[in-house]
Image (cartoon, rainbow, N blue to C red; front, side, top):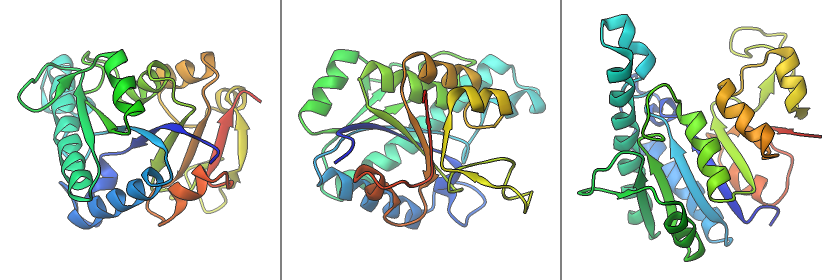
Length: 236
């Protein structure tokens, strides 16, 4: 295996599948199966999942909700998705722990760095919900920060596109894909990979990012085996 401890970042929108809202059980099961495959390879797995299929904090201001309040609502949306993913993984025979940036003891543990690392060492899949517990930070920032804290070797950003392009491939037919690109080049070309806080955290801590299509069966395990899937963003 090329990677032994990873942070998998999943978007909430991806959980919708073909639906316009909520959680698609078929997509949820697919993700569970993909994660189980790499778990059986011996990979230590931490996961951060967004909440855009339910609520996004940035939508709050448009509807008249205070931004801070909206961000907390978005954090709770990520927790709903995290609980759904936890249930799917456990029904698939895996051991998990859900850790939250907001204290909700009835359903999850508060995030404690050393405890999270210990869970990973014991072979449990750790899901981080509710962001970092503070407004104005995205789940991308959560993924970068938690990956650094638990000493993950890479951030795997699973999306619905197969990498980073010169432009949005869903809007520009002439967009071309990068197989490898440096952090500096992403800045220079103003490519939309992660928010700037998340991206800077990875750059300053020399933590590589791989952007890939999570919806294509087998992509996740191919990355773990060292195949060049998606786009690798690194210091080199």
